[in-house]
Length: 458
Image (cartoon, helix red, strand yellow):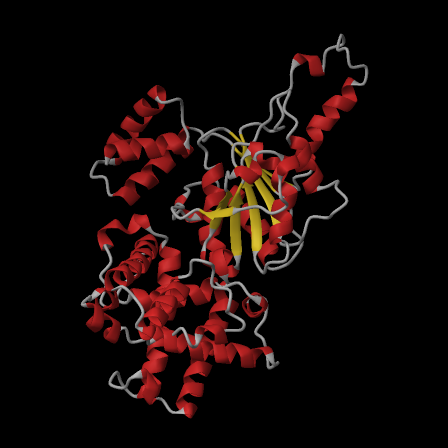
């Protein structure tokens, strides 16, 4: 392994604390024979621990080493992988370097650690090669990542197995022609993966937030790059799960589908009463359109000053990004809305075609107005200009969709639909009687109140 590692060209950037690099160093010391057995075993267990952490985080199964190699391939952002996520690279000298890298990764994939285990009296590599994940705790890992990486891992294994004609041969028994054929197979698998899903964090995950590290304390201190953190426990809600609001959902879908298809689309504001499904509608979009390249970045009000750096970081990626701002509103003395106005429309740099802003708010006008805004005794003699400045933010959302509280009939339809889905064993009249009592004691009629009732009944 350590002899081949320096031969990587396109995929050479593996990170300073890469498990592959560290195991290569261990194998190098092992072959030299100049090592302390206890110290070398401790170094091995440290890398095994990191493999187990990755396996637990992403729910890997069967063979942790195979899954880890596949994970390295799908997260390695390099000129080839970033190009392949935009278009399938046809021909070109770069493919020759990638083919050589794939041959090396095939060797890593099939590496036989048995001699190391036998000499040191350990069996950790055998254990991770026949690994069983904790299936009962699926919420601990990102299912999206797990399924895709494991599928690629299995595909690489089957590719190598088919060329060998079984499992009985060792790595060194492949002929040069078989080695080349195996590398071509892995190359095709990884290229197709990049084309379908993309590469790195944005390729594997659906939603992200901005990390609150030291670099985000103030704009003047900001280094120019943002740090994205995947959100691994997003709701699996779909638009059809929201009962009612068919016109609103259709307007939202039409705008989003135009955006995904590369047609002109607008920023969207969903406004109206609390608990009516505004946030649910937007969250559902990443489940509806993830496979078509839609990604979502959640941004809080106090982070709006980072809008420009965020957009600079994503504008050249082959995804469609919705920057999502939930429960958006501004008090009279808050000025963060000016950053939003400049990005949406008004700054020198135009918003890229692969970015839209979707926001929800309980306020139609986003910025709280006071009597001073309309009073004849306002000190500001240009009060109409001040008022227009505040209201102009709403006008920069090309689509505004109202979500109002349902009337009694609509509320009862929502309750009945949710009760049927939940399999509640009660008559419709009994459920509706409970629904009416529940709405009186829980703030009125809304989809959220209906869901809380159903949760209580189940």
